[in-house]
Image (cartoon, rainbow, N blue to C red; front, side, top):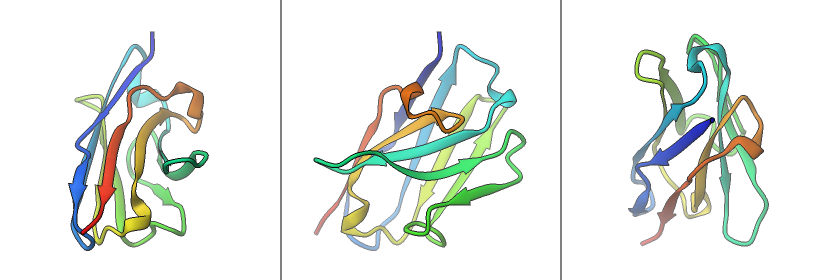
Length: 115
């Protein structure tokens, strides 16, 4: 059974930083591209970033490019999202997914950017 559990969210002021983690289990982690999505309150999901199997390349939505960095530790089956220069519009529940399949998401983590 695929399990994905995101953590590390919280309340942060505009301009602040957070680092999200996603613990993966139930599949061979290093065989798959992994992604981050977010879902703002009352809205649909938005793709944020994806990273290749080896972790050497990542792509980003224009809305986060230059501020967010995705990485992975295949030895620990863990995906990361470093978020800097946070804005109020980054407020959302953040999910990690296997490949770019939002249906594979597990537990998300709430990020709230507010003064």
